[in-house]
Image 1 (tube, rainbow, N blue to C red):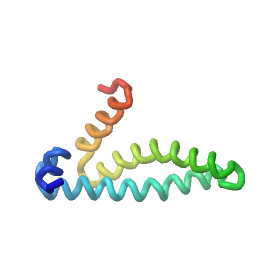
Image 2 (cartoon, rainbow, N blue to C red):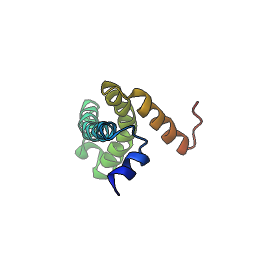
Image 3 (cartoon, rainbow, N blue to C red):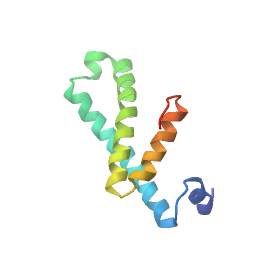
Image 4 (cartoon, helix red, strand yellow):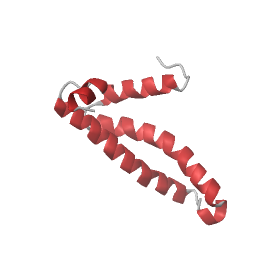
Length: 100
């Protein structure tokens, strides 16, 4: 996919804006793994106590809401609250929930 197509797909105002959007997604993804790891540790969940299958299932379930929250926070830090809030609302609507 060409850069101009990515700009159009993400509805970026400029290539700089597209860079910020990609940066926010990258930071959020990496930070989600770190934060969810700490949350699991705080609750004392480990592979030994829950078993490998339930441990990873819980991690995957936990990563979803953590990512959504961090996306808004990191997007706000980069001055893109409105963009990522609209992105979140669109995503939640696709899951079948009604959002204003």
